[in-house]
Image 1 (cartoon, one colour):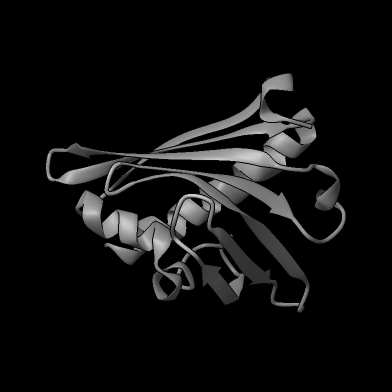
Image 2 (image 1 turned 90 degrees about the horizontal axis):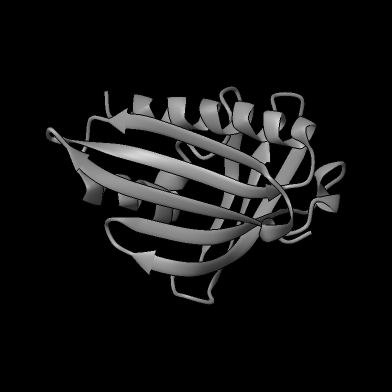
Length: 148
């Protein structure tokens, strides 16, 4: 399913007490991504990034019980430090039937901090939208915590 054929979208905004440059690096540098890029309680043992338009990324999230969830995609737009656009897909069931979805991360300077706006579009059902919204909210909690 392509992002344009559905109305199921996650849209979140969070203010992070860091510069846009620092927040952009947190979204794009593997060692930094390993510190926050999964819901709370999970670790991130694998992060691979080819940060260029057309380049791929892959990240593996692991629950405390050992369940692995692997996300992957391709970068479509890279405009440091203000915007990042990439596809998002899952390797494992039950989410691998979703296909490519589209992520847009916008970073705006606000009073010495950075407003992060996350838009995840192309989710096929309201149930999948809610699940991804919970996951992204938890990830943003971890990102925010890195800069406190």
